[in-house]
Amino acid sequence: MPSEDNKSKEQQTAESEVESFRKDLGPFVVAAETTRMAMVFTDAKEANHPLIFANDSFLSLAGYDREEVLGQSFDFLMGHPTDPEELARVEAAFAGSSESEFEICFRRQAGSMLWAAVFISPILDKTGDVVQHFASFVDLSEHKQEEDRLRFLLGELNHRTQNTLATVQAIAVQTLRGAANKEVVDAFEGRILALSKAHSLLGRKHWETVSLRDVIDQILQPFGLNDRRAIRFSVAGDDFRLQPKAALTLAMVFHELATNAVKHGALSNGAAGKIDIVWHAEPPPQSDRMRLRWQESGGPPVVPPGRKGFGSRLIEGGLAQDLAGEVHLDYEPLGVVCQIIMPVRLQVGE
Amino acid sequence: MSLNSPFFDRRVLLVEDEMLVAWLLEDMLADLGCSVIGPASSVNQALAMIDAEAIDAAVLDLNLNGRMSYPVADVLAAHGVPFVFATGYDKDTLLEDYRTFPVLQKPIQRSELSETLAQLLTPQKPSVESAIVVIGETSP
Image (tube, one colour):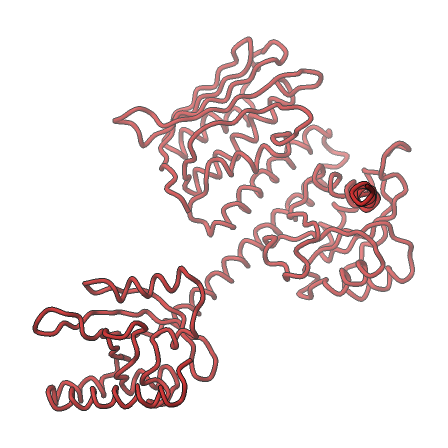
């Protein structure tokens, strides 16, 4: 914090500089003072970018008097942030030789915070040296509020979807109790739960894209994916992003494959089998597609099913139709093999 | 239900305001061998049951007709009764002070319910073990 003496000296300098603007640039200064765009000028010769000019719009946006801001460093507006990343961003904007734009959260005089988009541009003198910076501010508060509201609504929608699925689960179990055998009830319940897990994962990612790895984790966890007592799964592949529809379909497919493995395959009673899940991008020019292989081993000898149930219909039909993919489900004697070839995007970090 | 079940005769309070879901959870708990207290469908009803009954553990729906069940959680915690929240919300919508408690995501899966209950009903021993470690370290 500058001392009172210091401050008033800086202020004097600032005021005299503005006076010289006024002399040199007359009408432009009046325009800058009265425009509805909030703007300030800062001194480029000082390290902390002290404010030497602030227009009326800026003062009303920020809620300060002119005397309170002139001579203050630029980061005063942001409540002197300590986050090194934020400081570095501001410094980079001032250091840039061209225009730059970023968002800051700055502190109003009343203490409330205000989101603004800041646009900073250097002002050069005749010799090409940066003597000042010009910064303009656009109030983003409404925009941020709208974002918060949408996030809230999406959270509410996700919550209601989960509750509805919980009710569907309850109705189904109550309805089928006594009327159907346990296997049927379990199969139905399992499918509803798989669907809900996929919904929940997508909800957490705001229905944008989710990672293939996360889908596999969510769906296979109840089947002992992370069971340390008995390692039944090996999962390997680069992480790919999946569109919501692809994620939902794949989640259901993994659930059907795993359920089948529990009933007849590598995870069935007494079998010490294993499931390998491996995937990779196809070689160019098809590198926007991936090939995934689900391979069971160590289970009882595989007997192809007599007729196609919901599971194999979903696996073969669902994927091919929903995902513009190809699926090959083979009941090989040593273990079921399911190969999926489908379009994906490589993960580029979140 | 089997006499060997770790849940046999354990008294579990069920707090859930949606009737159908409450029935389902009641059946799931009974299938595990638990003795179900409730279901309570409001904060006040739950508090009254805690007052009146001996309880070993609780399954606590987070949102009871628009009212959060945190007051129930507070009383359970004060009585040293382990509990798990059940919610259709994401785990991080819980108030910060409550995020250390276990959460079951709705719709609830039988296997997850039984695993979580098993953990809740297992007596906590780590304090004894850590006491032994401390003695071992301080003794020359």
